[in-house]
Length: 371
Image (cartoon, rainbow, N blue to C red):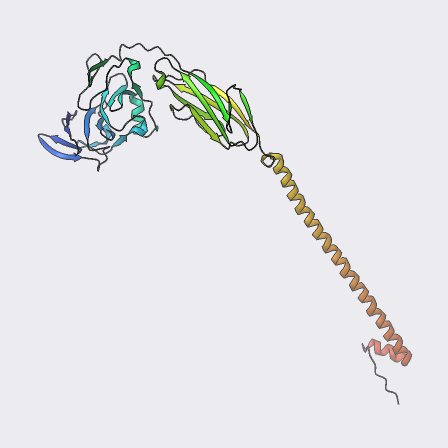
């Protein structure tokens, strides 16, 4: 259980399973739990920052209650932060403001710090993951870790006092002189379809059909080598640099034809970026059918086929028209010949005058009766 009195005189009583009870004038007037939006109902510590926002540390994450969301002393907005945001754990015991723009966190993951602006941005979902610095024996911390019940504090001189399982840890962020030593990055090997290349080149030509490219890298940081994290990007495959991660290998599959530049950078535990990024170029050769000239030829072939088919069709139609015209002409000539025969027969049987009269009247056939 923890008890905290905010700037408005409201007492926040954190419980071990029922969330938070709010009390004023010795009267409990509200209860806030996970049903209302809290990260969890097991409450470790509650603090209020200089801006008036409340921070609640629970067994399942941190809840921030923005100062602008309070109505009649009750928060109406809850912003939750968990291990997915870079805290390393969901069980956070306490959050301490060191007055220099950083928050100190104690948890079952140890002691860590995070920039105040970063954690607020993460609460408002302006960024997905925070750059949290974790302290270990490499930083001079000789202890088994913090406890969930002990209360750390920041004294009037800005020193952070952290109760540990076996004593106290004291840190003075005001008087610490930080020498910015930038980390170094180095690509160790490249594996292309199970063939590893340790004698590195600045450019690799990938044959058509290359399935997988794996890149191994490392970095050097003098402050705490185990806290160095890497960011990378492959152009034409990724739009932005990846989030900082401790993994030292990355693989890509089925790259598109063309040039791809792999860019590697690092950030150490102090949040200092590497000065010179490591870069490597991959050129993925295409199959013939993936080349632009193939599609140009294919389009030309299709267009030529369409035009040829159209011309052949037109040619066939013209031939058919000519054949029909000849048939009509032949038939016309046959009809004319038959007509001439009829006229000659008529003139052979009848006098010319009568034959002409019959032709003029349109009579084309005459029956001759013989006695």
